[in-house]
Length: 488
Image (cartoon, rainbow, N blue to C red; front, side, top):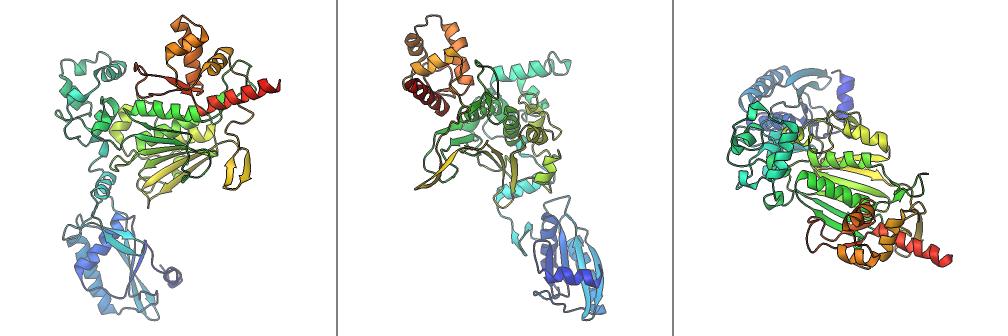
């Protein structure tokens, strides 16, 4: 570093990567600074510089003393030791000692009192949150959230049918696992420790995962406008269950709250989702698999008039940036979960998910928020029609001209027959249909898949209390149909 480079850096002041000190005399205090840099991506400590960035300078004796002090602090007062590099820059005011601390590979680094320090702006702070400590251990590869045992669980909490289907599909009659008990099998597959399930085992195959981890669900809301603080909503659902059930429920929520458009297809087709399903599928899977499971928060799915937002707990790990993942770079935050989920969810791995989503729908923003410890994917919807009202800009019509009257006749009849919430038998009677399989295959199932009709108890599709109702899109279609009919 030459004098010009030094002056340029000092003129910018202190920040998370640059710390100024007039002098240093205490090894413990210096160790805390070194540990904070090593825990926070690395940085430079400038000795012989005043707080305001002006050069105070050091003489030869001070440099020799500080070299010894830095060496002792780095090797004896930080655990594990750090390995800083020092450089002396001669100035007119004296020598400035520049100490470079690399980003640590063995986080977290502790001082002699066992405290963990991280940088916070130009200062440092003491880490006390258990969740933050766990994340630091995770980054260093010492522990992963997806294999932490879930206290109180056992093999009895596994959904036998779901696990058997997965095991047989993936491993078949593997001799490697022949003769093993279920406890041994789960342990060998990395889904438990022989006594309790770990998070991967619970969230993939547990009968009721939210009994032990209630925050690990998807909270979905559809708003009529573009503001998060809007007190009105069109639809809402807390989507629980295994990861597969959460994926299916979240995807169904999106489909019933977005428009279906014809795109020049035939008269009797259901149309395509306004945002390609591939893009939404990849963003959902990415949130479910790569979220931070050390953070007790839910994934938030929000459908606005102009966009779909998927907010995942946990910012991008290590030095990964949104631009990195756009190019396909990836770091597995939950390696065991990823390994098994890739055979259950539509996940291909290798960092291809986000690039594939962007290829299908380029209008996607990726927002990393380290301060809020969350990552947001925003998929922008096609342009909507707006008008200015007393309360601000609002969407005047949640269904554009692209949602046409051109749905299959069977679905049209079903929508026109629906009044509020109705049971399956009531719908059949209203339509005059006696053959239940035909009604399900030709009327009910296509309407559900098109997002025009929804279940009143979505998490229990076979409940004897199950009823059906029009979705927002279904109501809009019916209103449009009636308007056209009245005009005619």
